[in-house]
Length: 369
Image (cartoon, rainbow, N blue to C red):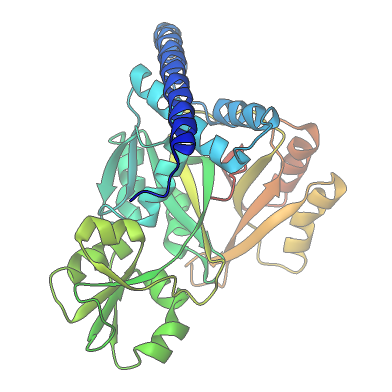
């Protein structure tokens, strides 16, 4: 016997009728928006202008969030509008995006967060392949891991930027939760744990405590580890809930990363002819890589223009130049955009002190997801 009274049932039915009516109105408005987007696409096609504009996406979402009065949270509003814009953009031209595969990787999740689920994802076996696919034009855009709050930079991505023609036009900061996935819903008799090397390092404390005898085997991606774990009941993987669903695995242990707020930053890359540097939004990051002559005071001299022109440095990483002469490349993130006079002046003066200088990109700051 139902505990719901007739009055309650009638009130609930009325509210559901209101929701159905609002849904119909929303669908009508969304299709009207899509028709306007198709017209925009035709104009862009005739004028030869880029279809995807990350600065425009950021501006639209910022404007919508500023006018939001609730009860929807701004983060949810941003996710909804990103999907709306993704679906409309797919009507103009499908976006081909290279990501680290197979399905179920955090790289795939970052791509969906940035481009929306309407993007056409191209799955690659390594970040090398993502760079190659993007540089060769197989994909219009690529998504690559850059750094993690627990283990630092993704060294291979940094090295690939040195000689690749692509540049950075956006970023996604993703909260990464590693789960132990397995065919068998139990923690005992695990012989091998498979994951990307970064994930193995991010979970080493938990693994040492709970699976001290299990071999830790590095693979090309966490999703590839999940795919392999689905073939052997004695194997387990460190991967996302998406990967668990993709490969039919049990989540034996949830969120086992050693740092609760473990984040990975992903860069969105493309050729300059696909999309040039996005316009300044007021919330931007400029990324460069430089080297300086190996002499006393070189690094200090290089950084002096930043202080002089009031430009904040938000990241400074060094990587060996592999020349055998103890030389280094420095990867630097700056707050601001080269279109701003103080940033432009600082970069111009900084170059005079550099033996090597390359602009990696200037792009809107990503919101934490």
